[in-house]
Length: 248
Image 1 (spheres, rainbow, N blue to C red):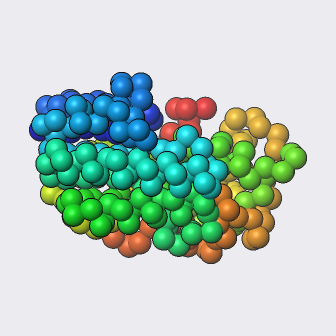
Image 2 (cartoon, rainbow, N blue to C red):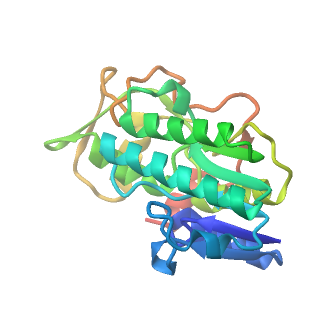
């Protein structure tokens, strides 16, 4: 089966391409680095020729509100139009647990637009909602830093290892379209401020982490369960503590 991975040279995409090829599929990494640009449409017709499945794990190069909206709206529109012409039978997209609840964030408003375009396209689809990656903890701390203090809401979170997530996205890609959202989360539940406190301590980062109920998450206000998946989520296997030991 030919599976085109949009964003296939990034963190999740490169892992996904490797896993799918190991399983005997023809997985093709598509990104500007390989001559495929979803913002302009360049290279889409060629790379989608003969593809059964497209997996979109691409991301906006900017988290700024307008830039993210332009990226997801334009790139998704071009991609879905090209898939319709190529006869692609399954569109898989990676998105974020809680997208529909976190619309105070411009980035997540853009992800919601992406999802709505997919649902309205007529192409059979599966949308994978993932919790935050282990590898993204430092960026979360940086985004919440004021001076030498990190302000984070004391809410619950179940981060996920990117390798485990790539495996789940791969299983979704080779399965039948669900025409719905599936959720993926890690095995351990933390309080967000405590999690980041542990990460910074492991990295010997001197910043102080403060539990601030008013702190936002990339612009969105949070309730206690805003970042958690529902009861039907697939729970992955790699524990955060084990990953942290191996990736200090």
